[in-house]
Image (cartoon, rainbow, N blue to C red; front, side):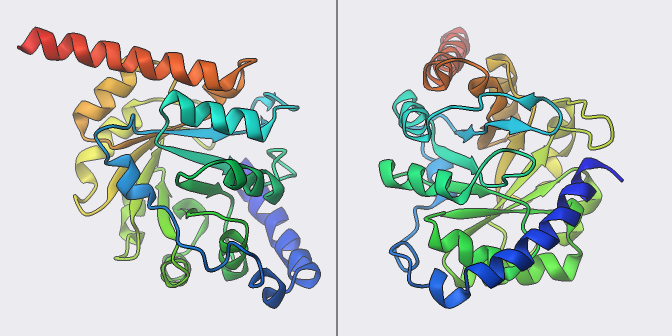
Length: 271
């Protein structure tokens, strides 16, 4: 059993418990439930933005504690001031040290797209996402059957949420539906946790033009971001590289500035 299978097994029990503690009718009373969402896909395609989806992430199963006591308020505002296009917030507690409260806190201080980074297996979690102020949700193709993913995507769209489908291989594109707004290529091997940007580069031309293209995991080199953008990617999900610094916002700012410097040099060289 790999780590993703362990997480999903635990998530099934967790969701059942949350359903009993926080009924749907209670979630629907949230002040965020009927407020307009901010489009992740539109922000990632804005020319005045970096395309970086900056993630708030306290820990991970592979690395353990990354930044256990980070402030959501300070980090998320720092990311936005740095020029990030969007935020991603881990809400899984057991494996990543996150919570729904983290996303609510980020929503309170930021008007930008916020992705709920969670292991979604049940429509209840979509209603939950809407109630805590998320604009987009993640569906991981690796852990969802084709029909299940399609139904979750359809329900999410009905709630006004945008949908990011994460894939690890070309074969998983078979699960793509018209309700998917973005496809994220995860560069991490689930068996040994190794990462390679080559995974994204090998799949970019397989992704349809109708979706926003995002590269995920192992992105710690501005040069790689430039290469990925030139290859056709619109977004770049980065968390651990920023969160391991004392000031994630400052690390994000320097990273984005470095990307811009490389792109300016390339543009001048062509001119």
